[in-house]
Amino acid sequence: MRATTIVSLPTGSSVHRRNNTMNNLSFEEAYNRLEETVRTLATGGATLEEATRLFEEGMRLARICHQYLGATELKITHLQRSFGEQMTFVPPDADQDGEDDDAQG
Image (cartoon, rainbow, N blue to C red):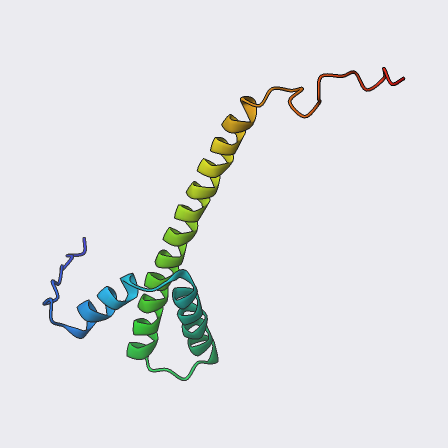
């Protein structure tokens, strides 16, 4: 069995500051940085340490993008439900002026 070591980073560390900065990114910023990270990894040539750091950063960026997309999907679903509920309160003949279309004379 393998022993697991948990490392706690000091709050002033560069990794901690980078995580705080990432949490303040917009969806577009996170997505663009994720694309850049993937491109850098795909070109190769990075050291193992650098590639690992880029992979970790990419995973954090992907999680941020996923959270934004999930929240947006929830908002859209809520809006669709609200719109559907509003539409049920509109009387079916509300757009007519009370006269029968066939009875023109």
